Image (cartoon, rainbow, N blue to C red; front, side, top):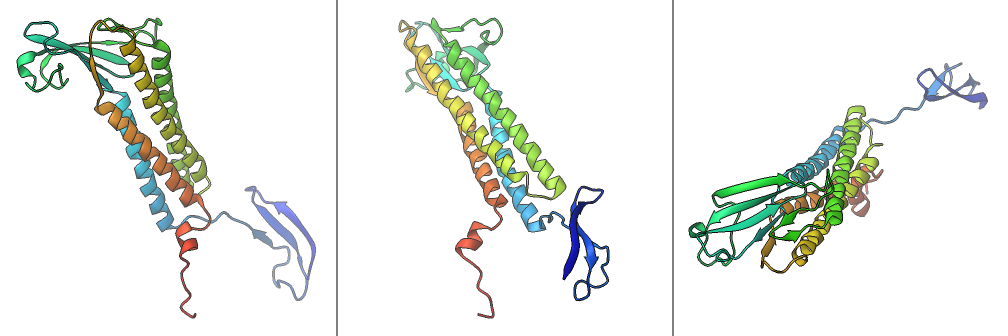
Length: 265
């Protein structure tokens, strides 16, 4: 039926089949060309991608909020440690630490330690020097662990890089109308979520190393709301990446598990 068929790319780089049609074949297409185009995504598929991207954007927002604040952990002295009307506490994050002086009268009588940090008082904040000069910070005669602190900060920055790459892939997918970029985007968002959670775990180890460096001053410590933001962000990023994997599949798992019955049957 077909003779002298050969494959030839056109000017746009698309592959076509060129050949002369014989009688009984495709009549009226002598010297014709069959072009193969990438199918565009439907409006419903585009809406699902935007919904999954919204989940990932929530994770990105929470990550930026948590990383930019210094309320990862609060270290509080006993409120009667200094023996006067004030007490001191500290709170810090990945980049900066603050020492706050609070009035004992403002603290809850049932609370034994100084705090919380939201109470009014004087605050003295400084950026950590182990990013520039390599010096460890000293908080209430306790020394930070530079290696663990740097590792937590580097993992957080790498997670932001992966989030940016995943967002670029989604923008390209929506702009071109193709699903090809969904799998790279899912990889980027899942890896970023894992890196965020690892950053929180390493930061917790750095806090324990700080507390064990000196035992002369008793301190009460607790992870604060910035860690809650970052931990929740990691969960959102992983869920968003899984959703992108599901949307990139050629057949929906829901349709595969529950196929639609034909009305004729």
